[in-house]
Image 1 (cartoon, rainbow, N blue to C red):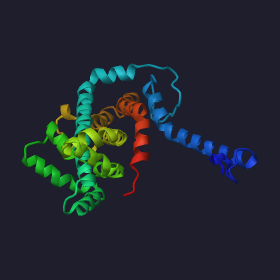
Image 2 (image 1 turned 30 degrees about the horizontal axis):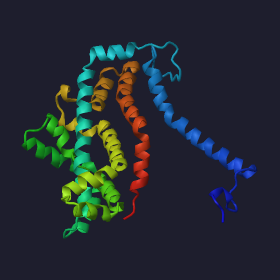
Image 3 (image 1 turned 180 degrees about the horizontal axis):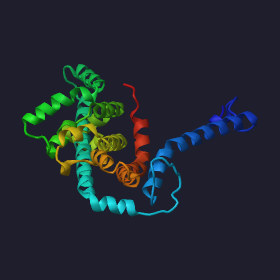
Image 4 (image 1 turned 30 degrees about the vertical axis):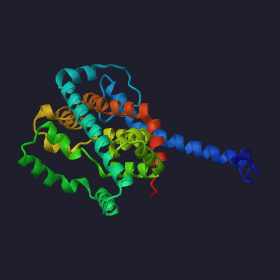
Length: 286
């Protein structure tokens, strides 16, 4: 019996065919990566250029300077916008991790009447475009007096059907015998969830956390609608105003874009292994 995949008939690790397929695969991946990273590289290059122009595309700045970043921070309340975005994305992510994990556990491990129908209802809401609910949600929050407030910015996003679906699938794949053993030892339902199942869901929670933080950080429509005061802007909305104000100064516009993008890239790169592992373990079956 073969001891590994390499020993199966037809599995090639040498020869012209093997090296042709490998070269084509790595070449395609490298070309795709370069094409996808080209706009980001141009953004950073323009932000670091002393005198960039919209007509001239240069991948390498002739003279590197941080003057665009210094002028941006000196003329705009970037610190307040950055704080608003951190508060918005961080709070929404924390609420999603709590509420989505509780709902996912209930739908996966607690027996109650109508559980499967309720789960299908959650799945159906994933297909509803977010733009459809913008006006009703705005009217509701306006009646509550939450327009241009942090609670109005955060409240509509404290739970996500996609996150509930992801965690429900993860909890469903965990053995029910673990929960039964915990209950025999005296744990109630919440203790079983918190002490037994939640620690086993760390990869899925990391995946949900990264996904929620990134999507909330770059959210443009909702902060633009709910925040009318400039001091309540988040960074994507602020970039829109900076672009209008400095539409001829591409160095400042690209510096603002870099300030928005770099934290998200840092978060993703620092936790990408948890993201990939969580997506692999959660699966889409069940």
